[in-house]
Image 1: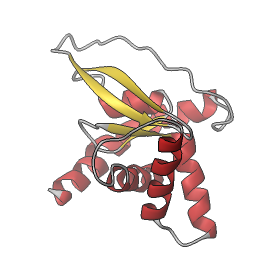
Image 2: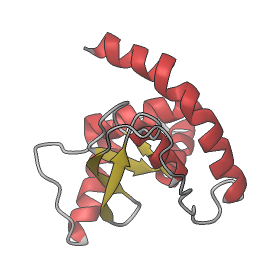
Image 3: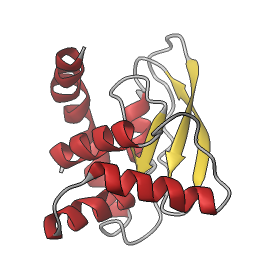
Image 4: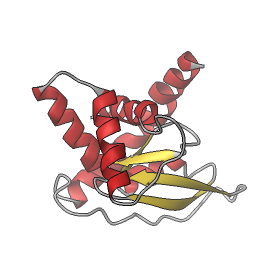
Length: 153
């Protein structure tokens, strides 16, 4: 499963994220401003389904709904809005790209520790009234998002 997911990231998803990511950097002045979601219509006329994604920001959680079709993948739509998915195809969680940028810069100064940053972020959000379901709800998904975001950069 991990090998298939890695192949999907490297051959299908990351190449399709390069242009949306560069556009996001340009439109937000290198992430200094809030991103404005790019609204592009479906041109494939294929079947469309809805996907709910939990988005992790610095200080809050947000549930968003995406309309997914053959020409509008979840990953592309998320990056256009300033978020990075935790999975290549049907992500349940996405992380604000600015938060991933912060973690990347932090890990250049200290030893990388996904467990510490995800546990701290979970506690920080819980102190503000946001609850995430499951045991260790962020660690693996945050780590995936951070790893593949860094490969996009």
